[in-house]
Image (tube, rainbow, N blue to C red):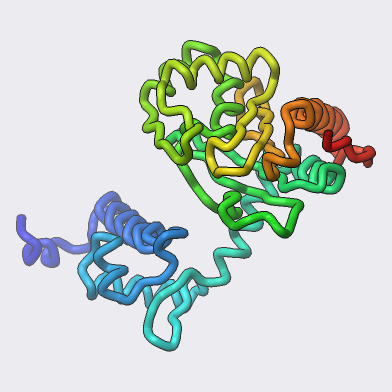
Length: 278
């Protein structure tokens, strides 16, 4: 049967109509998924190419997404993400189990430490982590992972904390699949070395990173366990000069305390005094 014959056979079968509907959704998601921190705006031809769609199809989808607020078209014709996504994104970050457990923790850690606090959620389907919350030092550079940034699990402190929440054999299997990029001279690029660091993080209950992801930045990260599995991690980051090893270890203790209180009470942790920097 060819396409012309199809119109002579009466109503479309329900499964065919459903497949066509799913395809339309897939194409709209391809358009939205083309946007990233590296590519925040597209002219129509660029958007069609990035989404892998014919230009006419990309235009029809873009018009619908603009009408619904998921895209916005600027004066020069370029498309950018729309404000409707901010509303939906805030719902996502506010309604997950990780968000309920860490919201008050992040606020209190930022207040007591005076440093930047990051919360990351792991997506095990594609082994990525997404920064879902950022609190604290307004002077911190944008390079300290803006909210919404998605990256592959790899060799950073957040990733090591999450991996440390897994059984050793499962963590080992994952590490051997990673691409370990050298971001600084101190970045770990050897899987065997990374596995030793993951084991050390598991033994002490937290991961430590010093000048490995960004020169001059140190961090401590603790896995957040939900139903016996790491759902993400909480990290405190700051300039290496303000984050000696002793302070990183003390901050880890505080993160664990806040998470335990939040888990037990279902409410933000009670205020505590700031820890010393030295």
